[in-house]
Image (spheres, rainbow, N blue to C red):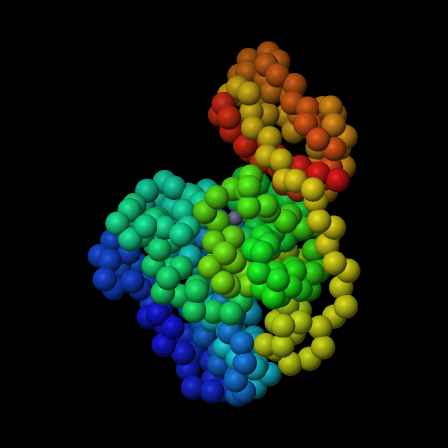
Length: 320
Ligand SMILES: [Zn+2]
């Protein structure tokens, strides 16, 4: 057992569901999982997705990995939880979990006496995530986001763990990497708190806009498969992929006013500091604001819905 997850005997795959039985608010839900135990002993890895419930390429890639990895080729244990934001999936929730309207990926390490999301984060981290040697959290652009594929990781100061984390991130095959710093990172992310808590953890982004595009799903499946080979959990030599370019910072642009956002850039575009990246108008078409790039870099994601609140997220640039 790992937490409430039953792990099969050596050489087998098992599917099932688990809950957090001692918390009635959480125990309303069951979380599906797939566990694969190799014939031989080795390291353990947790693959999660759907902490943002409408990031479908991550969810589908996790399910597909769970169904297709051959236990006879595994050394160690692979556990896959394809949908962390269980309350949000059929609600098609964007960013948040409908139990408390918080972003679950800002709440780690959580609080056993807190809100639904804080309690979920606490139980998931302490009972499951920290029992693993490695962890990968699969994302996409949300229902109203487009992105160019990238990985995110955080260094911890522990040289051995950081070497494992960088090896994982380099094996995914993304063009870009965001290396979040202990200062200035968005706090409470699963991958970051897992890393601080002793797990070699990272996050990968592929796809978005609520679309289940095959090339985006395949990118995640290939990326994770190559990581599993690179860290020795899956048989076979990893493909030699170019390591990602690590951006210098990850700037999230927010809107100075509410209005219609006319985005002037696409994901993957290079921008220079001062370039116009979009225009805001009001609902009779009057210009409100011109949005300019605060730094030079690459556009890593854009919000595809033009309906923007004041301080609403517009796009993100990775500094180059
Ligand atoms: Zn996400």
